[in-house]
Amino acid sequence: MSIRGKWTVATLYRLTDGSTRSAEKGYWNRATAESHYNRMRGRVVAMVLYSPEGAITRSWNESREAVQK
Image 1 (spheres, rainbow, N blue to C red):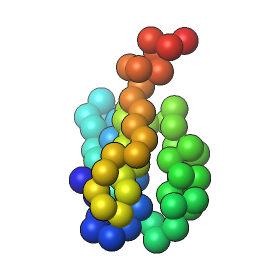
Image 2: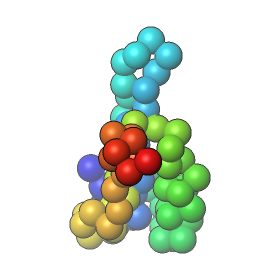
Image 3: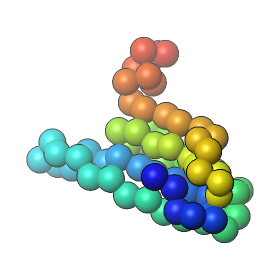
């Protein structure tokens, strides 16, 4: 889910007990949002980068990464 009017990185984390938690972080600047997205890739279960209009611009998940290796 995107935060209206901001570049949004939606992230799904895996907790130590095996459960998952989601979080969204909004940025005014696209470069800052993409930097966060690139930094977190590989450390989380899944991520989506949304434009301020709500369109999905990038997505990543750990199962797709495992298949590509």
